[in-house]
Length: 308
Image 1 (cartoon, rainbow, N blue to C red):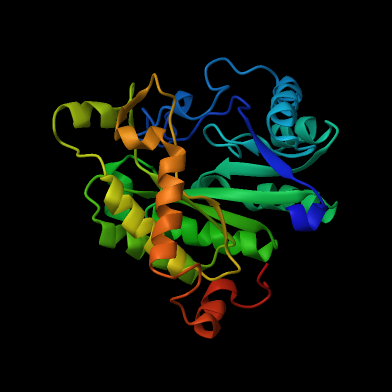
Image 2 (cartoon, rainbow, N blue to C red):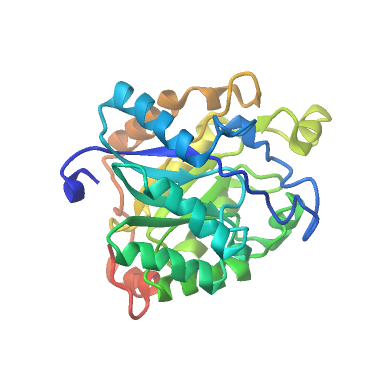
């Protein structure tokens, strides 16, 4: 971002008040077993208007980091799950604020019909920085069913390929430590995502927060939280096997301290980031060290889409 725009660019989290198809009854109720949006979105409880959130976010970010350009990150729940006219009005409200240079739209693979992709592609053609963030979490359907995602891997493949057809940048979310998944299975999900093709990755350690089905499973001893060393091992391995063209948007995730139950190390973001950094240094390695670039490029981008 600094190279492209000549200065620091900062993302700000926005809650537009949308819901999800596995919360409103169209696909299910209760949402994902791990989901409590209040744990990661500062505006999740009673969101003000999008305009007011952007203005407030600008003030806080500029004071804290000095950044003067911003990407509005529609984070909470499913931010393409509405009528196309409502979506355009909502996105326009964010882009109308001075110094907002783009959008990052968090959504689900089963909620990105072509009209939504066309709308985002139109913003991109106008010169805005546009990312669509697909919450896959796992490439295994049995895991997705276990955590009540309400979609399958095939729907992710379809959404990613159609987004590529609109020349949109896709960032794929993967959660490490899901119930019933070993570190090897998490790494297999990562490989499947690379084979489909993506321009960005977000890695999240699964954390247990209050007010979720996962919290109840954890209290009953039915789920054991991921260990710190296991997360560092698999995150480092993923980095080493990721082509240099792919951007890591996130390497860990935190939760609000009053909501986090386990693992407690999730609250220490810099401990996690520093440990990954130190592991790479110790192994004298970096991103893309352990891949066949020429072979993987064909898998990543196919035809009609060049690397970024």
